Image (cartoon, rainbow, N blue to C red; front, side):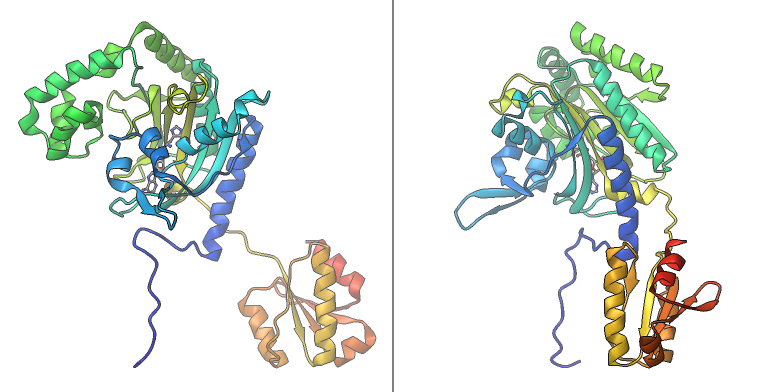
Length: 418
Ligand code: HAM
C-alpha cells in the first residue's frame, strides 16, 4: 500500500522464539537446571556486555571469535564493549571481582542465556544463540572432568536426545605444548602450499587451530600431522588416562579424537565435545574443557577451571518433544453484570491456581463459544443474566460436550478434578 510503513525484519542470524515453541525451550531449561542443582551447581548471571579486553584476553587473541566474530562497539563514554560471545571469561571475572573463592561453597556455577557471534549464519549457526553453561573451579582431579561429561550425557538422555557421540582429547599444558607446537609448525611449514590461506596464517599464530579447519584439503593434509596426545608431559598424560578410565567406569562410550583442539585459546589438558549425527555440519551439541590458567592470567588466585556449553538451538533441533495441551477455563458472558461477575470469578480462580481466560470484546454468545472452541479451551463457563441472579453457572466440558449447572464450589471441583 502507498505510504505504508515497513517494519524492518529481525536481523539475519537471530530468531524470534514464538509461544508454542517456547514450551520446548522451557522444558529443556527446567530439566537442565534441575539436574545441575542435583550436582551442586548454583545459578549465576553476568552482564550481556563486558569490556572488549575481557574476551581478547580470555577467549584469546588468536581465536576466530576474537579475530572475526565479536559484536564490538564504542559506547557513549568512549569504552570499547563487546556483546558476550561466550560466557567463560565473564564468570572468571565475576569470581575474581566478588572474591567468590573465599567462600566455603563449591565453585560450581550454571547459567543459561544468549551469546553473540558474527559468523556466517547457517543451520545450527546463528548470530544470537543461546547456551546452557556450567563451570567448576578448583577441582584439579580428572574425576571432575568425567563427572561433567557424565552430567551432560545424563541430561541429553533425559531429554531424549539419541545418536550422540562423546569425543575427548587432551591439548596438554604450558609445559608440554611448546615442543608440540614446534613440531607441528615445522610439519605444517613443509606442507604450507597445500593449506588454505587461513591455515597458513595459523602456522604462525596458533598451529593447533589448523585442526579446526573444515576444508577438505586442509583436513587431509593435517591427518598426517603429529598428534598432541603423543607429546603430553607425564602429568597431562596421567590426567588424560585417568579421565578416560573414569568415563569407562561410568560406562560412557567415547572416542579419543586427536583433532579435537576446540576453537578457543584457553584450553589446557581435557577437551571434549558431544556431537550428534543428526545435526549436519555444525554437529557439536556441546563442547568444553579445562582451562587451568585463565584465573591467574586474569590476575586472580591459582584456581583451575573446567566447564562446557551446550547450544540450545542445536539441542532443541534434535530433542523430541510433544507439546501438551494447555488446560484452561474460558469465560463466556453476556452483558455488563455478567462481565463483572466473570472478572471477579477469574480473579478468584486464578488466585487458586486455575488457568482462566476472559476476553473483553463484547461479542455474541455464539461468537464467544466458537472462540472458546478455536482456542481449544478445556471448559467453558457461561454467565448470562440468569446465572448472575441465581449464582449457578453453565459449565461445559469442551471435550465431552457435557454441560452442567454449577455454583462457585462446583467449578472448583470440576476443574481441580482434572
Ligand atoms: P563453543 O564450542 O564455542 O564453546 O560453544 C559451545 C556450544 O555452543 C557449541 O557446541 C554449540 O552447540 C553452541 N554454539 C556455538 N556457536 C554457535 C552459533 N554461532 N550458533 C549456534 N550455536 C552455537 C564455548 O562457548 C565455551 N565457552 C565452552 C566452555 C565452557 N568451555 C569451558 N567452559
